[in-house]
Length: 185
Image (cartoon, rainbow, N blue to C red; front, side):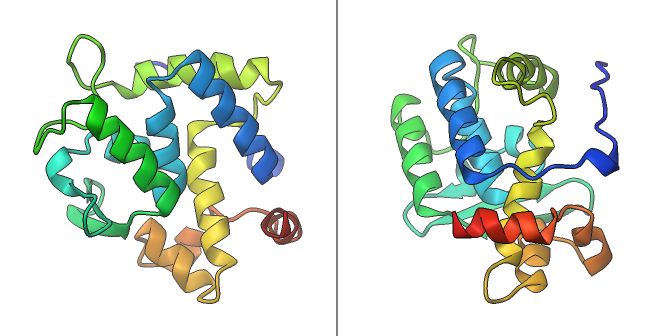
């Protein structure tokens, strides 16, 4: 029920890897419960609702596969788990008592986080770092742009986000000059 301010498309900005690191460092210090959620968003390109509904039965750390249930298209999207994400999820799994099933991201009261709770926790951290343009969807855009810079190009970004149309994927891509500079960094 909360309306977040929208950043006009003309002001879309892709964060540099350094900006992403700064933000994740602050989140880890100030909101440690949110850190695994943000890292999962960054490395999977998933939507917040998909990540928050993730179940341990959909995370296979041994084979390095994560299965996101996508409600928009009513299917399951398999994504390889990046090395950095695997480490974060492994630590989160150990702290949770190594469950075989059940929600991955639970509050201290044992309930799944809501999108509203995550938004309310994220916004002040981004504003303190003077990055009000950085939203949770920015992680999805960063993931798509990074995937596009891989040898597979647009197809890699399209596969990561699970889009059937290239035009849909292009909405998530940042400025190519900035993206190239970010990739080099």
